[in-house]
Length: 452
Image (cartoon, rainbow, N blue to C red; front, side, top):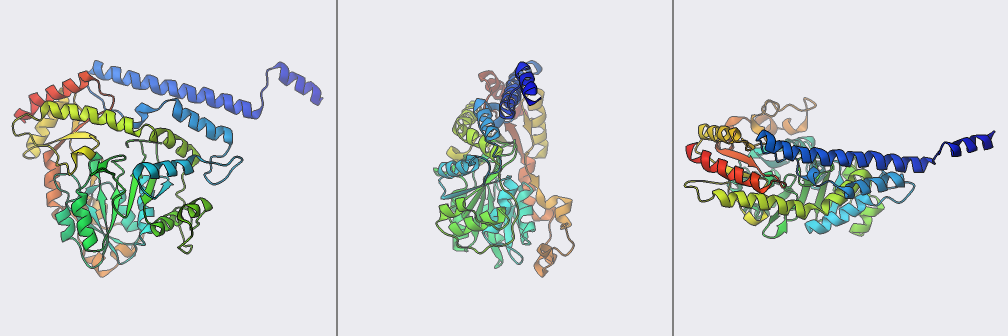
């Protein structure tokens, strides 16, 4: 009977389970690749047809066979978990090693998101109840929630014309309870790190660099995230390289690294990490599960190899547009603490106020240019859940102390930030813009700006 079934399978062209999986992956990933390539091509073509220029999502425009091959490796190995499996998994470990080398940091830790990386950074610094952390008033939610989740107290400081943390207001917000500041390199542009680091070092305050929106950016020749005590990155779809979700943390400090590792791995410190630091220096404590899987690591390895090309393509477009409009009388741009380190995510035009900003945006949109108010972050002190200090438990320690009960959020606490938000126009750049796209953007700005 068994021989008869075997003959029937052979007659029908049956394949082994491994061969079936291999063929299925090749078919599905190949089809996905063709669909993605087709969608991107159609998107660029339709942009010209509809008259609207579309920057798209940077990272996914560079997906190709490298990402597919990495995913196929993981499927064929049967080892998607980063620490063990039928075959020794290497994707996440290799990504950590390569990313640390790229950033110029001693250690890198791959996690599930940029938010998780912030949580690990705060845990790595040992921040908790009774501590205060200074956060920019305009940034993403995660810079606020990572402080609250640690039981610490978020203290907001204004941004300046760089759209990043104002060093002067950072210094004004310092109290004896300040343990750290989160310097967010917002929208592809670096903070004034010279001033921030000087103030922080003088006052013995830890610096967390949030480079989630500036992966690969630099400041004075050093990669963003490598200058402070700990740096974090995001690989979500809107970022410079992407695996859909994902994040990383870097540091030069073995104690911060071990605490972050333990927090991301439920308190454990696996051999791969101990081999990097040489020894354990921290006792086990309760942690979370923010481990990256091998599928994510495979995509990020492929993407990391393309990061410099993505950066170069984006900056080429940005600099071409800038060069085409910088001679306009009275035109003002975002302040750049280090122009060479800015990724060129967008061109930012400063107007006299909200009315002029809105007229400029409307005129540019009429001409098919992707213009908007500042986007990608939140005016946190004005959000109702922040104003009302809402947490997952009414006795959460962040706001249970006398300082936490006394602190007030709202529009009055960030007037400078609100004024800056009301003045800036954001014009998105795209690494795949054609020369025609660039020319249209330049022409539109030259037509609209003097009238706005």
